[in-house]
Image: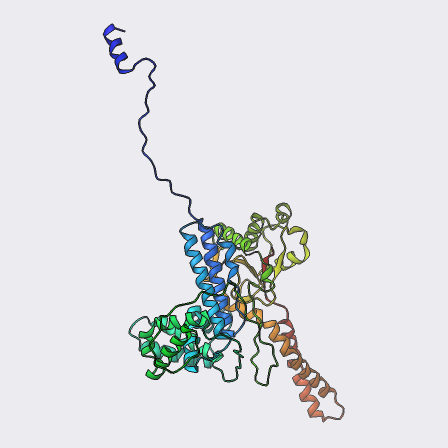
Length: 486
């Protein structure tokens, strides 16, 4: 190396000086967001509870508890967490307000109570539930009856007169009519005793009605509109409803109750015209109160991720999903083979409890909605599924209804409701059919009867026997549903 070059290098790189790295550009670190599966789990469970609440409102049943959503908030991260919390809070407010309607009008005037009944129906989306129940469904062997057709036609006629948003108006019309049938029924005598007319739930309903004054103006008379304004002022002020025309006070919604409370079911026999409140399937009642909804959500996500289209191996794919989430033992479940018929699943659960690491609870008389992750087994030929093997699938979505196994398809809600209710109907029909058969048998053998009478009874006897046999065959459920126990 020449002396001149050495001098240059020494100047550029002094002895002992460390080489300075080039400055790095700072990068913005995006925190990990919520997993899509966690978002879907919350959203579909939210739809499940909302749909349950709408059905309970239409039937005047005790409402589901929205705290069922709380475990699904834990894995969420911002901004989805804030949105989910807001939806959860909104659902609790809507349910609490609907309960206020269920408890009776208290001191609210009938025309204002009617508006509150309708508003609660809108908040819970009961119109879409009514329409879904009205839809003709060939697979379930059901079509609209005369009253359903009349209501549909009436609401369609009203909707045609609207300048916009006719679909929403049509559904709202259906929901209003069905809700009013229940809560404005003269034979319904809710006590309403002790119910605070200035309850935050009532105030919220009235405030929400007030935000739609432009819509109400065309629907109610001037007198009813004035009564609404007076009632709204009275409730927000915390005083009984009056007909004065004093200056309106600021509309303030008071904070809701500290905890969610279910209304107590009305006991039958409380007076000649008492309204009986039937039981319903709720997340806070057996068997769903013992169900692991989070495990069901995981099961739903696994089977949806594995589906490849229908191949005739629905049972195999359901068993695979059960193994992947740790419900069944891998080695033993594999030994049962991949070609098992879906109808064998009921026997599998009952006769092979050793295979199950987590217990599966059978839902008696299941009805829609079912929580995601529910295993549904259709018997052979049920709902027009395979005449030899039936079908098995896992509910993966609530809105729109969907279930998956080796493939995914629309879940047949009408079939579920029809087939699950049929054994109970058959049990009611059987005594009369058996009595008719016994009478025919006695008449065919009655020595005191004429020969012609015995002959006529003998001719009718095969039909009577066939009727009894057909009803007896319906006593066995043709659809079964299972949830994972906690």
